[in-house]
Image (cartoon, rainbow, N blue to C red; front, side, top):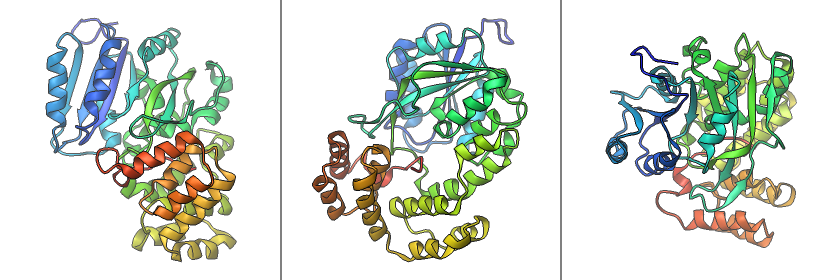
Length: 380
């Protein structure tokens, strides 16, 4: 394989979209350095960061000049979907790993991924280990519950998507053949925060795909940048996106989003418990756009409760019925709505020790891993 210049093209491009991540991106890039050889390049699209991200990236490139780097800083921020799309366009690799700007590849991750690309699937899903923001405690490993690596073809693509579509809301799990990506419609999904899912799930569906069961990524749960838009993304945008994916079966759409009113109200209570107040146009859109049926009065009653009370009630429920769902519990107990009484509840009910340690660290943190400044990326 060769690019337009005649030089051999790399097998893999690690495509990173970044914005104001000076505190994290250096660690991410450093973790890749010992895993990169001539068959791998790193492409970074910076969405007009106004912190020291450009200097951090420049220092890394200067320290490792023999590696294949490509860094582009935009004049304005176009959003995460457009930036990842640009990164794939700029890439020279046969495959693109859409990697976050704050997570870390596990040792040997690139080599294992390259082995999975030998038979040239269209899409590869990479499993992850969900960890606390400072990477000190494991909250869920592996996140995708599969025992062995699996391969899928057109006849089994429905099984592949049913297993992976919701997990793929975490973009770091997505590796895609570049020419497959470029041949798809992309711009209509810009602004959804999940353009990669739109690319994968449109017609025609992928012909071949792979799933890697072993975690290859250490993911900083609770460190994303979209908390201010969390309700809009998950409760309004996500259902609309899934409904638009007519190429996938109803089974796959249900695996991604259950529109039943009782499930919607459960998700609403979660967002009210971990986020801020949902007011004005967003709340009116929710009531108008989402069918709630007989659950509408309950939704309105939940909305009227103080967020601190909603958080305390859900934390109590989680202590009894969701003790092993450590990602959800972490979100609830480290929410800005959590109080000392909530954290005391965690200790009294003896939640799993790794979870208690992660909650304690988050409670003491007032800097780079402070959960108040972090973002929940996935509902329970």
